Image 1 (cartoon, rainbow, N blue to C red):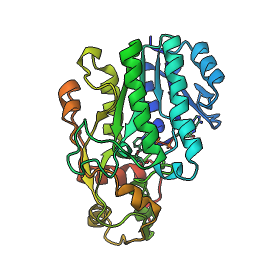
Image 2: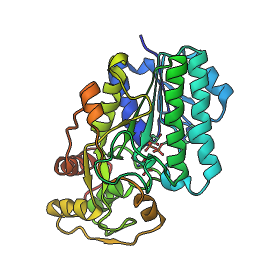
Image 3: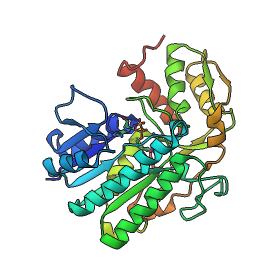
Length: 315
Ligand code: NAD
Ligand code: SER
């Protein structure tokens, strides 16, 4: 039986990924870790990924065979402390590669992002292989992780796999400090009957994905036969692209009293350097990736799940 470690498990994506992995492998076989305490979880350990000795102990004590490495500081928060962001996003990842090699870990997953794109990257239908010159420390750190993952795979045969997630939209947890966070916050405001002020301009088009698709993509990639994978940096991955005005209009079709205005802040400059749409044909070809959610069923699902699970009280 696999013994799985998830880092950064209390974040937006970890909250869903841990549940999905536990359904597949059993709770006792999926160790959730993060920098904070979590007394409610029967299989949880505190792990600051900057502490390499503790990382080694946790991996050894739990006889870990696979690692899903989610811990990171996202694009907007990263700009407040670039050196710390580099340490958390890149140096700790390099420690994980070293430990995984040393401890003969079977498979490692880490997410890259659309933030690996920069102002010189083609904006539409962005190809898998293209100019990656990001201008945020988050993007720089994730491109560097991609290249080192590829290096460890080629040089040491370590089975590292990765996806460039678009902006991920889910209902279980709020995102923390990303540039695409508005696309989750907007649902909370709309259901609470609050006006929403969006921090991006109305016409800022970005690639996005519903959380269920992101989690399924992750597990399908990790289950794919190794010899089918032709990309060992990180696969482009896509589902839909929309602007704040377009998602607001879809919400207003369902909640006609919802109101929004736009006051762009520093995150607009970050978003302006990212792609609008992604060519993910290699993911579709290599391991049969197919998204299931478009903008309409994403909006239906978010409103339904936030209310049904009492995350937000609909006024
Ligand atoms: P998040 O900010 O919600 O969660 C990240 C988690 O990492 C947090 O729980 C935080 O406590 C933890 N963390 C931070 N520093 C740590 C440290 N030193 N040691 C241990 N844990 C630490 O982020 P998320 O949205 O869940 O993102 C998870 C991963 O997916 C990240 O690698 C991110 O780059 C990637 N990603 C996310 C999105 C998205 O839209 N959410 C898009 C592309 C890529
Ligand atoms: N959603 C992430 C962010 O905005 C993209 O990686 O930072």
